[in-house]
Every structure is written in structure tokens, then in C-alpha cells.
Figure 1 (cartoon, protein in one colour):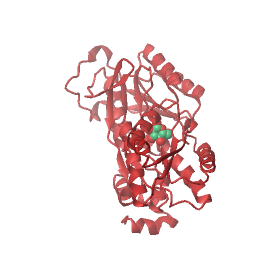
Figure 2 (figure 1 turned 30 degrees about the vertical axis):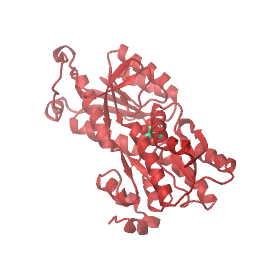
Figure 3 (figure 1 turned 90 degrees about the horizontal axis):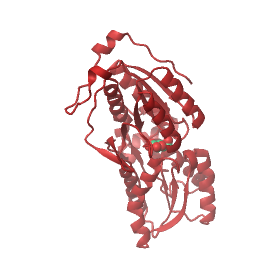
Figure 4 (figure 1 turned 60 degrees about the vertical axis):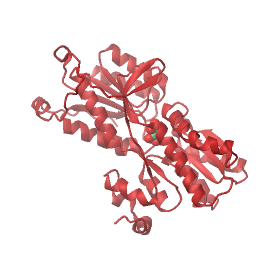
Length: 361
Ligand code: BGC
């Protein structure tokens, strides 16, 4: 899995800029300017397809466009490996380290170590609670959850559901994003439970967003609810697909709306087939570009303003929070038009018909 540092002729670094110093640039560049070399640690390749298919691709695209050296590795959900990779990157001379933590404790250890060695740090996508990253780059994750809650409501209404029982498949309990997603969908659904318009069904968090475990958990939820689950708030497409696989076994797919997130190929196909209500598209290209710009600025000793902060305890973390978008059957084409997935990937054999129906030509 290890990918070597890409070596780029030094002259390229001077000519391929594209990065403009920002208004409140206040760093003492001369003292700390270094040739940027960026290390990225992705969390795994199973909790969501995005890390390998989108994040790696768009981070590479951003680093190559800026002409900087980089090393992107994947910890494969192994906290010890995560720390080893970080140590190797620091020893290897990275100027900035971008991490997607596996939990806040191990993330903090890595960030603190990097900081003590003068390496700039960025929390990429997931905020490390109690951490020390200089920037946090992500999406507005509470809004992600809100879009999921609203999406489920829309699909339940369309199905004419009366007092629907709604089950929750939350994300990993160690991922701060999962907490934010839940805060978002609770803000929409809890008032409906309180008003007895909807009935709160079983709720479980899925450790490490493990898709296989999610299927087992959902099967137990369905049994516990005597087969009476009318809607599933699944926190991402992988968990949604796990629920759909169990619904299929019980001939309930298509009848019970399921949510998702990440606009994965599988999620989009489930939407087109009518088995999934919606997904949330996060334009990872923009996330990767924002993080890459900040990492390069930090290496140059510049302090870029982000215009926004996020609270982590008492600390205000300078943040870039991008806007997520809800995707339904009729907007799957927008994700394709944005270059996130291709028509060829989505519209394979069994889905050609659905693609045509959804106006994907
Ligand atoms: C990310 C999601 C992803 C999940 C599982 C979250 O932190 O924001 O996009 O689906 O982790 O990898």
C-alpha cells in the first residue's frame, strides 16, 4: 500500500504556484519557508469508498497541480499502523501532515508529536477533539445530518407512511462527524418523535462504520421491531447498503426508505433502483483543494485566514467548512456532471434502464 514520495524537480515548485497569498497573511515567511512536502493519512478503505476513490484521487490532483511533493497512505483502520505511518512521515521530512483520525485519542498523539517536531498539521474531514491541528477542513457536518433527516421525511411522505417507525444506524462512536450527523438528523426527526408523528425505532452506532457489522445490527433491529421498520436513517451509503441488503432478504427493499451519504457508486445505484431514498454529496475535490492550499501555505510559513472557526473545547480551530448537497433520483446526474463518478461506473448493465429513466444520457 505504501506509496513513495513523488519527487518533482525543484524548479517546478517555483513555477506551478496557483496559490495566492491571502489578505491576512501574517506569517514571517523568511524564517520558516520550507519546500512543501505533504503527508496524508487516510483512515481505511472499507468504511466508505470515498477515501480511496475520491479523496486519494482529488488530493493527488491538487498536489500535482501545485507541483508539491506528497505521500498519501492509508492506515486501514489500524491505530498502531496510523501512528507508525505518521512517525515515518515525520522522519521522512514532511512539512505538513493531514490526518483523518481513527479516534480523537490516537489522532491527538499524532498531531502533538508532529507539532513538537515543527510539522504543520491539518485535521482533514474529521476534527480531532482535544487535538492541536492548525486547521480543520471538512463539510458542514450538522447540515449533512439535517439533509438526511429532511430526505427521510420527504421519502416517507411520498410513500404515504402513517406514524412510521424510524430506525437509526449511526456512524462510528469514535468519529466526531458521526456525532454531528446525528445532531443534524435529530434536529429534524426528534420533533416528529416528540409530536408522535413518527415512532422512534431501534438505534445503534456502528463501530468503525463497519459495513458488514451494520448488516448484522440492522437484521437484529428488524427482528427486534417484529419486521415493522418503515424508514432507516443510515449515516452513510455503506451503512445504507447494509440495511438494503437485509431489506432485500425480507422483500422490503423499495418499500422502506433508507438514507445515505457520500454519493458512492453503490449508493447512487441504490437510489436509481429505488432502494435508497437519497444520499448526501460532498464535493471532495473542493475539500482536497482547500486542505492542499492550506498545507502549502503553512509550509511556506504563511498563515492563511479561513474566515471561520470551530470550537473544540476552549480552542477556536480555524476551519473551512464546505456545503453538502442532498441527492435524489433526479439529481444523480449532477454528481456525474461534477466529475465525482462517471456514467460508466454508475450505469452498468442492470442500471442502464434506471439511468435512462433518471435522465442520465
Ligand atoms: C466521513 C464520511 C464517511 C465516514 C466513514 C466520516 O467521517 O465524513 O464521509 O462516510 O466517515 O468513512
